[in-house]
Each structure stands twice: as C-alpha cells, then as structure tokens.
Image (cartoon, rainbow, N blue to C red):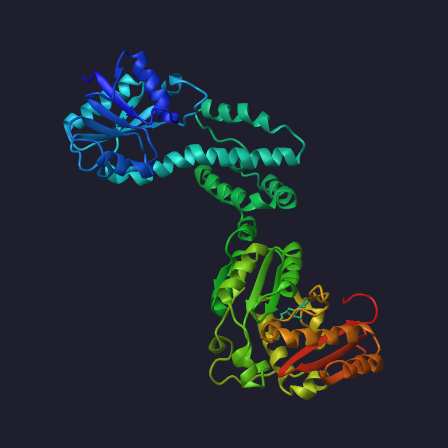
Length: 497
Ligand code: AMP
C-alpha cells in the first residue's frame, strides 16, 4: 500500500520500536517523498510539527489523547495509537499482541490506519475522535495507575520486611487468570479489611485513602457493600463532609456507628486545635469538628467582628487530620428566632473571666450543651489553655448528668512559650514580643512573683492572676496587650485530666 514511511521521532520510545518493526517488514524509512509521515513525538509538539510538513503524503500521529485537528491543515490524516507501554530497552517485539486505536475521518484514511497497525503486528480497532478522552483515561488507569498500585503495594510489603518484587508474579497471575476477583472483599470478610486498614494507618497512612477508594470500587464489582463504619473511617483520608444544618449533621451521624468524638472550635485553627483533633481521631470512630464563632460568648461586638475566620483553610486542615464531619452552622441555625433558653453555671461562670466578660460562660455552656445534644458525642475535647472553660463544662456535665466523657489536652505553645491562640494573629510583632512576659510570669507558678515580673516588664495590664482550685489546681491569668486580651494558665500539679 505504502512503501516509504518517514518516522519523525524515530529515537523515542514508540518511534524506535515502530521504526525497527517497519524495517523488519521491508519498508523504506525515508524522509524523501514518503507516502506517510508518522509522528512519534510528544503530544504538545504534534500541531507545530504537522504545520511544518508540506501537504501531500498521509500524515498520522501515535498519540492516544490528541485529536485529529492537531494534524491541520492536512486532510489525508489519521491517528494510530498502539495501546501499549513502551520501553527503550526493548525492541519491536513490544508491539506483538498489542491493540491499536485507529481514528480516521474517511474510509481511505481508515484503510491506511488499519494497514499500518497490522503491518506493525498490532490489532487495530476503530476509535472516534470524541471518544479519545475516555479511552485515554482508561488506558492511563490500566497502565500508569498499575505502576502506582505496585508502588503502594510494594511499600506495604516493605513495611512487613517482605520482598516487594514477590508481587510481580502475583500481578501477572491476576492478568493471566482473566482478572478473576479473589480476596477478602469478594468474600465479604470485613474483619480482614479492618485489619488491613489498621496496619495501613499505623505503617503507611499515606495509602489509607487509596486503599479505601479501591475497596469501595472493588465491593461494587464483587456485588458486596463495605460496612458503613469502615467507609466512615474512610473519610479519614478524604475531605470531611461539611454540614450546615442540625438535621444534616444528625443524618450523617445516623449513617455511621461506633464512638463519636466532638471537638468544638471557633475555627482559625492552629496546632492547639489540631492536637485535640488528632486525639479525637485516634480515640474515636467518627470525628466531628464544629466550626462556629459563637456570638453569645462575645459581649464585645468589635471582638466578634475582628475574630479571624478562614473556613477553607480550616476544612483543609481538618481533612489532613482525617476529620469526618465539619459542623459549620449559621448563627440563625444555632439561635433561631425567639431563642431564650440559656445554661448558666452560676458561681464558676461569674468569677475570673466571668467578672470581665459577664455573659461569656453562659454563651459557652449553652452552645456546648447544644452541640452535645446535636452530635451525641462519646467524648468531647477541650484544651487546658482555657482552664476555666474546662471547669465550667465539667461542672455542667456533672450537674446535668450529661453522658459524655470530657477529654482535656495540654496547652500547645510556640517555641518561645506563647500559648497558641487564634487571636495571636491580631498582635503586632512588637505586641507579640511583649506578650512573651505573660507565659514567663505564669512559669514562676507563683502569683506574687508573676505579678512582679509583669510589672517590671513592659506594661502588660493584668486583669487577674491567681491560683484556683480547678482540676488540676492552676495559676490562671488574663492580661491585655494593647487592646487584645490573652488568657493562659499554668497547671500546678499533674497533667490536665
Ligand atoms: P477556640 O477555637 O478558641 O474556641 O478553641 C477551641 C478549642 O481549642 C478549645 O477547647 C480550646 O481550649 C482549645 N485550644 C485553644 N488554644 C489551644 C492551645 N494553645 N492548646 C491547646 N488547646 C487549645
């Protein structure tokens, strides 16, 4: 049919195998008046190289993803994509038995395409230009992602001190056996799947998401269904579901089972929040983070208005930790019109912070009770950083016989000792420097020494600074740096429970 073929890119992976096969079949590989110019070049170069070729001969490319329009202005054109992964270390035998997608607009082009494929030892089939993206996606899943799977599987064998190359005959065997599905998902053996997940989380957590996505896809093939708690743990690897309404959160929680950990936050997350989320992730089946800047605990509208907010970043951080559900309601959702039911922890809520922010703990206790009522958590997580808040919640849980375990995690500090707080971003560099005196003062563990240190340093105004009989006993304080209020404390015995 055609006797002279010019292969452009004859030294590349595909080009070298194709050229060698064409030579074997006795075709002349000529740049001089070729009957066909075959472009074996990177996709991005095809259009430009095609434009530079004088019209006349047939022109074709071997790309899977590139549409024929890239061969403009040529009209005698087609695509012939060998469905194979080529290595430069091997020769034309790589073509044997592979299929080839031929895309042609005319019968004549199709005939040349099929002839070329068969001459190369390939098995041609027709592919519409419009079908290319789906076709190429399929090819990428089968070839490129097989490499990814081998990498992930090899890494797990390495974690077990087993040789990763032992996987290769196994993988070939699956192909030779016609892709017959065996293994725990085909059997519905969820206990084994759970054990896999536990080991992956422990040793190669970066593959948890991959394992779960594949497990779900495999269950569909097997006609089985992953248990919902396995899937909900799966969210540990994916984006958390964001619920804006109480009913939405309740519906999501009803789908899961096992223990629920609730971490109330006002967002603008920092390592302090993340330590609570990590603890919840390791202790609970489902982790819910609430994200709600609660207006009822801000007496000061200015403070409320300037409170830092960055929901997208918070959700991304929650995803990294494996939070399952983010509850981010509007103020109207939490305080519907006519709202008038408040929880007041009377004495405790009126002292210390309560003296300076009279309605603060009423707002805190009410919202926390409401969150507990909505999410029904097994455990609820707070930071020791807000020691009085912990004490107020502990009192409320006892007084109202709430069925929830209170977990308190230690205060997370910057390297220079400043307790992390969402409000720290509001401090100027100079104010932040001055604020360091606060944690140094608390570290004296002695109110008199602490006050002296603060008085001698650079004019932080003290609202209160005293030892209180919380659990654990602590030196607690609040200071003002410019117009930013900071609170912090130093536990005086044991760890925060
Ligand atoms: P917030 O978003 O400020 O309401 O804080 C949400 C939770 O994170 C509360 O339980 C805080 O006590 C806790 N938290 C805030 N800062 C820290 C910190 N530096 N270390 C540990 N926990 C913290």
